[in-house]
Length: 236
Image (cartoon, rainbow, N blue to C red; front, side, top):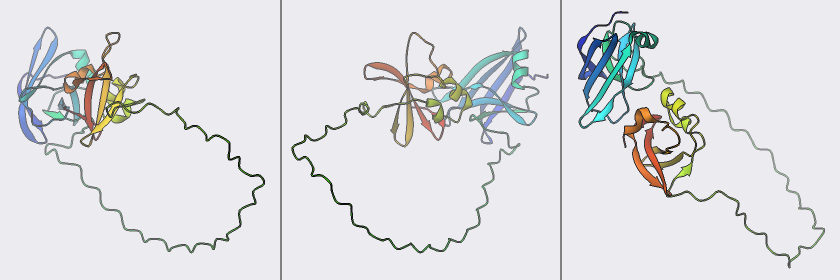
Protein backbone atom coordinates (compact mmCIF):
# COMPACT_ATOMS: atom_id res chain seq x y z
CA UNK A 1 0.00 0.00 0.00
CA UNK A 2 1.27 3.45 -0.98
CA UNK A 3 -0.05 6.47 0.93
CA UNK A 4 0.80 9.95 -0.30
CA UNK A 5 0.77 12.70 2.31
CA UNK A 6 0.13 16.39 1.74
CA UNK A 7 -2.78 18.63 0.74
CA UNK A 8 -4.99 17.48 -2.15
CA UNK A 9 -8.02 19.04 -3.88
CA UNK A 10 -11.50 17.64 -3.25
CA UNK A 11 -14.10 17.62 -6.05
CA UNK A 12 -17.88 17.46 -6.17
CA UNK A 13 -19.40 16.80 -9.60
CA UNK A 14 -16.14 17.75 -11.32
CA UNK A 15 -15.83 21.10 -9.46
CA UNK A 16 -13.20 21.70 -6.78
CA UNK A 17 -14.94 22.46 -3.48
CA UNK A 18 -12.18 22.10 -0.89
CA UNK A 19 -9.03 20.37 0.33
CA UNK A 20 -8.08 17.25 2.23
CA UNK A 21 -4.79 17.08 4.13
CA UNK A 22 -3.36 13.58 4.53
CA UNK A 23 -0.75 13.03 7.25
CA UNK A 24 0.83 10.12 9.11
CA UNK A 25 1.79 9.77 12.75
CA UNK A 26 2.32 6.77 15.05
CA UNK A 27 1.44 4.26 12.31
CA UNK A 28 -1.89 6.00 11.68
CA UNK A 29 -3.04 7.97 8.64
CA UNK A 30 -5.18 11.07 9.23
CA UNK A 31 -7.55 12.78 6.79
CA UNK A 32 -8.53 16.42 7.55
CA UNK A 33 -11.06 17.63 5.00
CA UNK A 34 -12.59 21.12 4.69
CA UNK A 35 -15.00 21.90 1.83
CA UNK A 36 -17.58 24.51 0.89
CA UNK A 37 -21.08 23.52 1.98
CA UNK A 38 -22.64 23.64 -1.51
CA UNK A 39 -25.43 21.11 -0.95
CA UNK A 40 -27.83 20.06 1.79
CA UNK A 41 -27.25 16.37 1.05
CA UNK A 42 -25.38 14.00 3.32
CA UNK A 43 -22.03 13.46 1.60
CA UNK A 44 -18.93 11.34 2.17
CA UNK A 45 -15.30 12.01 1.49
CA UNK A 46 -14.00 9.30 -0.84
CA UNK A 47 -10.70 8.51 -2.50
CA UNK A 48 -10.44 7.06 -5.99
CA UNK A 49 -8.31 3.92 -5.76
CA UNK A 50 -7.87 1.54 -8.70
CA UNK A 51 -10.79 3.10 -10.54
CA UNK A 52 -13.42 3.04 -7.78
CA UNK A 53 -14.51 5.13 -4.81
CA UNK A 54 -13.28 4.23 -1.31
CA UNK A 55 -15.51 6.13 1.20
CA UNK A 56 -13.57 7.49 4.18
CA UNK A 57 -16.35 9.04 6.27
CA UNK A 58 -19.34 11.40 6.36
CA UNK A 59 -18.48 15.11 6.23
CA UNK A 60 -20.27 17.11 8.92
CA UNK A 61 -21.74 20.62 8.45
CA UNK A 62 -19.92 23.46 10.18
CA UNK A 63 -21.39 26.82 9.18
CA UNK A 64 -20.58 27.47 5.52
CA UNK A 65 -18.31 24.41 5.33
CA UNK A 66 -18.40 20.65 5.78
CA UNK A 67 -15.56 18.91 7.60
CA UNK A 68 -14.11 15.50 8.32
CA UNK A 69 -11.28 14.59 10.69
CA UNK A 70 -10.63 10.88 10.79
CA UNK A 71 -7.66 8.58 11.19
CA UNK A 72 -7.11 4.95 10.26
CA UNK A 73 -4.57 2.25 10.93
CA UNK A 74 -2.86 0.77 7.90
CA UNK A 75 -4.83 -2.44 8.35
CA UNK A 76 -8.16 -0.58 8.47
CA UNK A 77 -7.36 1.28 5.25
CA UNK A 78 -6.48 -2.02 3.63
CA UNK A 79 -9.86 -3.46 4.60
CA UNK A 80 -11.56 -0.46 2.96
CA UNK A 81 -9.64 -1.06 -0.26
CA UNK A 82 -7.56 2.12 0.02
CA UNK A 83 -4.34 2.10 -2.01
CA UNK A 84 -2.58 4.97 -3.85
CA UNK A 85 -5.34 7.56 -3.98
CA UNK A 86 -5.70 9.07 -7.45
CA UNK A 87 -8.06 11.88 -6.36
CA UNK A 88 -10.54 12.82 -3.63
CA UNK A 89 -14.26 13.59 -4.00
CA UNK A 90 -17.45 14.27 -2.06
CA UNK A 91 -19.98 11.59 -3.01
CA UNK A 92 -23.45 10.31 -2.15
CA UNK A 93 -23.85 6.83 -0.78
CA UNK A 94 -23.94 4.42 -3.71
CA UNK A 95 -22.11 6.70 -6.18
CA UNK A 96 -19.69 4.95 -8.52
CA UNK A 97 -16.63 6.31 -10.28
CA UNK A 98 -17.25 7.44 -13.88
CA UNK A 99 -13.75 8.57 -14.84
CA UNK A 100 -11.89 11.87 -14.73
CA UNK A 101 -14.76 13.84 -16.30
CA UNK A 102 -17.31 12.56 -13.77
CA UNK A 103 -19.76 12.15 -16.62
CA UNK A 104 -23.38 11.64 -15.63
CA UNK A 105 -24.98 8.34 -16.34
CA UNK A 106 -26.13 8.01 -19.91
CA UNK A 107 -29.85 8.50 -20.25
CA UNK A 108 -31.64 5.28 -21.20
CA UNK A 109 -32.84 5.04 -24.76
CA UNK A 110 -36.59 5.33 -25.13
CA UNK A 111 -38.44 2.07 -25.49
CA UNK A 112 -40.24 1.50 -28.80
CA UNK A 113 -43.90 2.35 -28.73
CA UNK A 114 -45.98 -0.79 -28.83
CA UNK A 115 -49.30 -0.71 -30.67
CA UNK A 116 -52.27 -0.85 -28.38
CA UNK A 117 -54.22 -4.11 -28.55
CA UNK A 118 -57.59 -4.03 -30.26
CA UNK A 119 -60.46 -3.51 -27.84
CA UNK A 120 -62.19 -6.67 -26.72
CA UNK A 121 -65.92 -6.71 -27.37
CA UNK A 122 -67.66 -7.28 -24.03
CA UNK A 123 -69.94 -10.24 -23.63
CA UNK A 124 -73.64 -9.41 -23.16
CA UNK A 125 -74.74 -9.42 -19.54
CA UNK A 126 -77.95 -11.33 -18.73
CA UNK A 127 -79.74 -9.80 -15.80
CA UNK A 128 -81.35 -12.19 -13.35
CA UNK A 129 -84.01 -11.39 -10.82
CA UNK A 130 -82.83 -11.45 -7.19
CA UNK A 131 -83.98 -14.41 -5.09
CA UNK A 132 -87.15 -13.92 -3.11
CA UNK A 133 -86.73 -13.11 0.57
CA UNK A 134 -87.59 -15.99 2.87
CA UNK A 135 -88.03 -13.94 6.03
CA UNK A 136 -88.95 -10.43 6.96
CA UNK A 137 -86.29 -8.20 8.50
CA UNK A 138 -86.58 -7.60 12.22
CA UNK A 139 -87.31 -3.89 12.38
CA UNK A 140 -87.08 -3.88 16.15
CA UNK A 141 -83.51 -5.22 16.24
CA UNK A 142 -80.91 -2.65 17.36
CA UNK A 143 -78.48 -1.33 14.77
CA UNK A 144 -74.99 -2.78 14.86
CA UNK A 145 -72.46 -0.79 16.83
CA UNK A 146 -69.69 0.92 14.82
CA UNK A 147 -66.27 -0.74 14.88
CA UNK A 148 -64.12 1.11 17.40
CA UNK A 149 -61.15 -1.25 17.20
CA UNK A 150 -59.30 0.84 14.60
CA UNK A 151 -55.87 2.28 15.34
CA UNK A 152 -55.64 5.56 17.20
CA UNK A 153 -55.59 8.67 15.00
CA UNK A 154 -52.18 10.07 14.02
CA UNK A 155 -50.50 12.42 16.48
CA UNK A 156 -49.98 15.79 14.79
CA UNK A 157 -49.52 14.01 11.48
CA UNK A 158 -47.10 11.38 12.85
CA UNK A 159 -47.81 7.68 12.36
CA UNK A 160 -45.98 4.58 13.72
CA UNK A 161 -43.42 3.13 11.32
CA UNK A 162 -42.73 -0.58 11.58
CA UNK A 163 -39.76 -0.85 9.18
CA UNK A 164 -37.79 2.42 8.77
CA UNK A 165 -34.96 0.87 6.73
CA UNK A 166 -37.13 1.00 3.61
CA UNK A 167 -36.84 4.80 3.57
CA UNK A 168 -33.11 4.77 2.74
CA UNK A 169 -31.00 3.90 -0.28
CA UNK A 170 -27.88 4.22 1.89
CA UNK A 171 -26.82 0.71 3.05
CA UNK A 172 -25.09 2.14 6.15
CA UNK A 173 -28.25 3.87 7.36
CA UNK A 174 -30.43 0.93 6.35
CA UNK A 175 -28.41 -1.33 8.63
CA UNK A 176 -28.40 1.25 11.44
CA UNK A 177 -32.20 1.35 11.70
CA UNK A 178 -32.95 -2.26 10.76
CA UNK A 179 -34.03 -3.18 14.33
CA UNK A 180 -35.23 0.24 15.45
CA UNK A 181 -38.36 0.26 17.62
CA UNK A 182 -40.76 3.13 18.21
CA UNK A 183 -40.00 5.16 15.07
CA UNK A 184 -42.59 7.56 13.66
CA UNK A 185 -43.05 8.92 10.14
CA UNK A 186 -44.76 11.89 8.53
CA UNK A 187 -44.74 13.69 5.20
CA UNK A 188 -44.01 17.40 4.85
CA UNK A 189 -43.11 19.52 1.82
CA UNK A 190 -42.73 16.50 -0.43
CA UNK A 191 -40.28 14.72 1.88
CA UNK A 192 -40.48 11.83 4.34
CA UNK A 193 -39.72 12.60 7.97
CA UNK A 194 -38.36 9.94 10.31
CA UNK A 195 -38.59 10.50 14.07
CA UNK A 196 -36.16 8.32 16.04
CA UNK A 197 -36.84 8.06 19.79
CA UNK A 198 -34.11 9.12 22.19
CA UNK A 199 -33.64 6.65 25.01
CA UNK A 200 -30.92 6.76 27.71
CA UNK A 201 -31.24 2.97 27.98
CA UNK A 202 -29.85 2.25 24.51
CA UNK A 203 -27.40 3.87 22.05
CA UNK A 204 -28.85 6.18 19.41
CA UNK A 205 -29.30 4.20 16.16
CA UNK A 206 -28.21 6.99 13.77
CA UNK A 207 -25.31 8.45 15.75
CA UNK A 208 -22.97 8.81 12.69
CA UNK A 209 -25.43 11.33 11.18
CA UNK A 210 -26.85 12.71 14.45
CA UNK A 211 -26.11 16.36 13.53
CA UNK A 212 -28.33 16.15 10.42
CA UNK A 213 -31.44 15.75 12.57
CA UNK A 214 -33.45 18.14 14.72
CA UNK A 215 -34.82 17.48 18.20
CA UNK A 216 -38.59 17.48 18.61
CA UNK A 217 -41.00 16.42 21.38
CA UNK A 218 -43.90 14.33 20.06
CA UNK A 219 -46.63 13.25 22.48
CA UNK A 220 -44.37 13.92 25.46
CA UNK A 221 -41.46 11.81 24.09
CA UNK A 222 -38.14 13.19 22.81
CA UNK A 223 -37.21 12.35 19.21
CA UNK A 224 -34.54 13.25 16.68
CA UNK A 225 -36.25 14.00 13.35
CA UNK A 226 -34.57 13.37 10.00
CA UNK A 227 -35.66 14.40 6.49
CA UNK A 228 -35.39 11.95 3.59
CA UNK A 229 -35.86 12.75 -0.11
CA UNK A 230 -35.62 10.08 -2.80
CA UNK A 231 -33.96 7.70 -0.37
CA UNK A 232 -31.28 10.21 0.65
CA UNK A 233 -30.87 11.93 3.98
CA UNK A 234 -30.89 15.75 3.70
CA UNK A 235 -30.46 18.49 6.25
CA UNK A 236 -33.48 19.72 8.19
